[in-house]
Length: 215
Length: 183
View 1 (tube, rainbow over the protein chains, first blue to last red):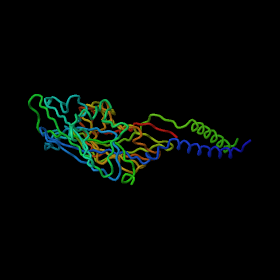
View 2 (cartoon, each protein chain N blue to C red):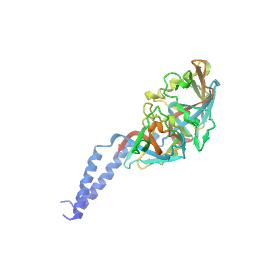
View 3 (spheres, chains in turn cyan, brown):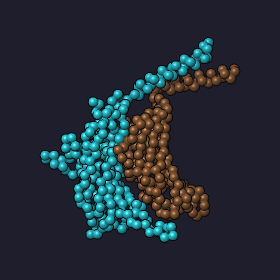
View 4 (cartoon, helix red, strand yellow):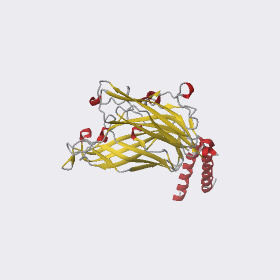
């Protein structure tokens, strides 16, 4: 009969061997071992009735950035009021209480309460890469073509703008510029004029972990 | 049998089970890691801010974790204004959910996951879906620690939402959904 201590030792060795084998099977391809997630956020802001097109540029660092998805978060808030304090009690609601999400509204954005149910906010967008000046969407001669907000997906249905098997590559040192054009709708002729609209454009993807694109 | 012999017999048995499991190959299962940020806030004003808060979780050894999404839930606990009983209320979407900015990093890559603070509106809860990652984008190795840092947290503490008396304890529960692979 085998000595139990020897049997224990051999079993331990067998476990170590099997664990190594399993780890080998699970090891990702070398190209994926250094992947680090990256979320890039750029914020663009408007006031009510401001129709000006806004742009925001982000410059990539020393690693290639592969973008798999693009989405957005839209938030509106009121211009801060001065709080009214009496006997240490704040009587009015400080204005950031008025901040609310606008992502989940089916028609336009911002029709969220009775107070300004006659007003809606929406936007169209585009982006271009710094190195090539290539627009995401363009008409003839690379002229920018603004795209509907809904192309960024429906958050309620788990949708982002997804590049599928062909992620957008923003090379090390390259830049991306978002262009957003707001749309303000007065459905009934009047609206509050002290709202701030913040649209956060979000890029989701990974860095390849190789400094300067592996050079 | 002496105690020592019994111990060896038990160790042999457990190792045999481990070998059996390993021979079947890696096991996959849906799993969630949770990081809780908790803070107390008085309800004397209707909106309160909290200082920066941090929470973390550690990925189990002998496994790795593929993150497929991130969302958060918001809970307020305290005593009921009516009868003083302890209560905890999960605030559904539609109410004024807390507003905050957040950042993430892990010790595996030892790097930030973002270029800038991200808005909480990217992490909705309930009927609006959370932040999703494509499979394979975020792979966390066993033993690495993942940190969530929340800043500029602003919560409404109006008692008409929850019926709770002050002081209240607020909890932001960050849920990392994904697939756990056990080696």
